[in-house]
Length: 209
Image (cartoon, rainbow, N blue to C red):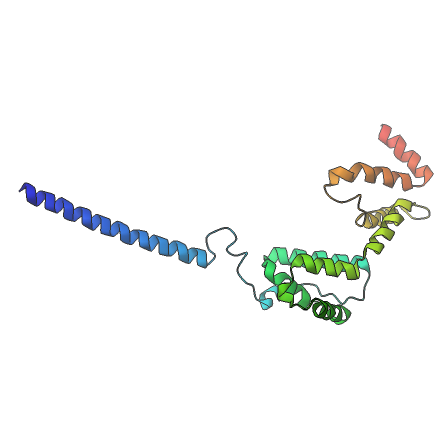
């Protein structure tokens, strides 16, 4: 009787172990499948390739090249925001951005590819940024805008016009980069210093109240 009981217990244990092993295999298979489908794991969706047709559904902006440096800067920032919102993988960003280039900009990019001797897929977003700004937002332009900001005075402009010009020029200033808290005081001093004298006196009076 004792032997029969021991054999029954042993058999039960063997069945339990076999079921545990089967469940473990099934769980591992399900985990792998979930990760492959991008349903689990941080970055699963982010690293999955995206089709160009999917990206074009949000109507990303085109860039024709024959425009001002400020509009070129606006386009680059807007196309970057669109890609981040759509979680376009890093390796596809240059390809998608290049597709939105038209006319002069497209000719420029083809020339860059020939000069570098590489395909768009082999160029990083950082490299694309450097080449783009070198062409459409040169350092000499930024320097000129910085000097314009330092010399800006209200003159005959309304306060609204002066404020718009001031904020527009600040985007090109090396001083006004980084965390706002680091340059906010400088902006206030520069803005007030450019106001007409009669307005500046009013500003000083109100700040004392």
